[in-house]
Amino acid sequence: MPALLAGNDGHGATTVEQPISGADFLAGLIVGYQFMGGLGEAMGAPRLHSRGYHPSSILGAPSAALAVGRMLALPESTLTHSVGIGASFACGTTQFDAEDEVRGLQTAWAASAGLSSVRLASLGFQASDTALEAHNGLIGRMVPDFDASHGDLMSDHPPRIQSVSYKPYPHFSDLHPATSALFEILSGRRIDVRDVERVTVRVPARVGERLHATYPPVNSREAKRSTAFVMAVVLTAAAHGSPAGSLVGAFAESSLADEDTLDLGRRVTLRTDLPVSAAGPEAVVDLQLRDGTHFSREATGYPGDGRRSNLRWGWADVRLRFQEMVQPVLGTSQISWVTEFVAGMDQSPDVSEELDQIIGLLLPIRPVEKQE
Image 1 (cartoon, one colour):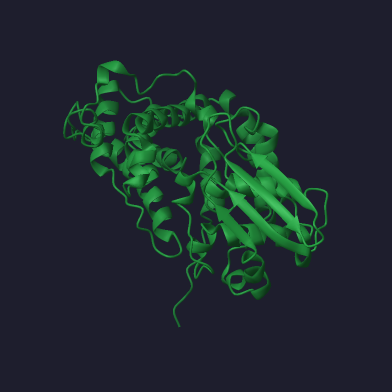
Image 2 (spheres, rainbow, N blue to C red):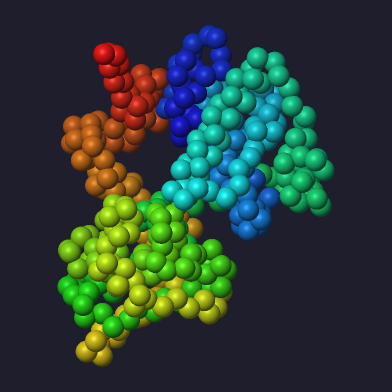
């Protein structure tokens, strides 16, 4: 999305200005997701992650290049070179900093690199036609026996954009199913955290390997990957009457130093013995109160999990979450304008002006302060 917005600014790659229709913008978005999904499937995105590479950054550069090129309706040869140049820009490891700022920097780099790839290809720079599948190509280095003739990275069955997930909680996504299960237990109940005897969370071993085990966490990144801390902030939020998903600010420094939250987390136990099954749960949460009352919930996913049709958000869900998160910042009138524009943008012959306005909302121009 940022690559497409920036590609619209001055039309990104061409010297001749042309209108960008809403249909072209959306086509670029869909093509970008489709290609990134196929590329991730071919390279084995989970394997990338386990080897210390950041899939969003590695896969993002060539995918953003294709998305922008499609939005601008560039010739096929230019698209090919854009993707190839983007493949050469692909980089990023998971050795992030304590606050995960490098993670954001890497995804921003992927968008920027994709846009730069389109601009370079439009200026005549060329890449290998086999920059992806050759032995020393992006896929070839990760999957030496990859056979491009056996698969189509752009296969449209099913459309991969439908499987894109929204993160309803501001912490590590592998803990989203457990968070969802605990919120279900607490739904409609006002439980005093002092009455909690213990919380037991069961996840598959592969998930447990990615979580942070040392307690208490010493920074935000560790807290977001800590089962104990995450369960503690969910219990605290529910006790205060916060709606499910309202955990904004829960991982700030003040929370990390809150003794009540830390004490609550010490009553949480993580077990990594949950069997892996396509139809089985991704997390099981048990809540035991001091009076002996026991609650248990299983979760096969989480709200907004695009991989599962029963949990996938529709337009109304996305609009509601957008309103909840953005209204305190933009206000009601701006929210109404954005949602109405997005709902009908596929019918617009030129969305350039509206996209520029959205960029203005994201990056408001502030007056330069005069030096004393």
